[in-house]
Image (cartoon, rainbow, N blue to C red; front, side, top):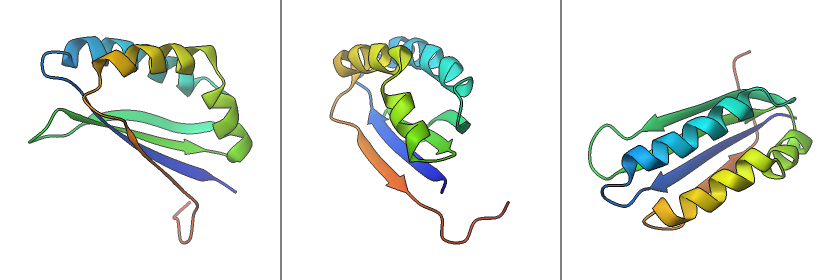
Length: 99
């Protein structure tokens, strides 16, 4: 069963460029992982410096593999110093999803 993960990260003022640079490496590498069906990064249009990771995996095993990848771990270390707060991560399973 597929898994959709949505993660929100608010970045410290002035750290947007550094965050985007670190995130772009993770996004590019994540897109080539087996079982990753969709992996995009968005930035909130107004308000806080909040970024949204929109991720879709073939199954829970693909999620676990992603979380154990070197590029994800490296990004996590970099983002920890750039984030203003802990990320909010929501994992969901499909109910009624268009193919």
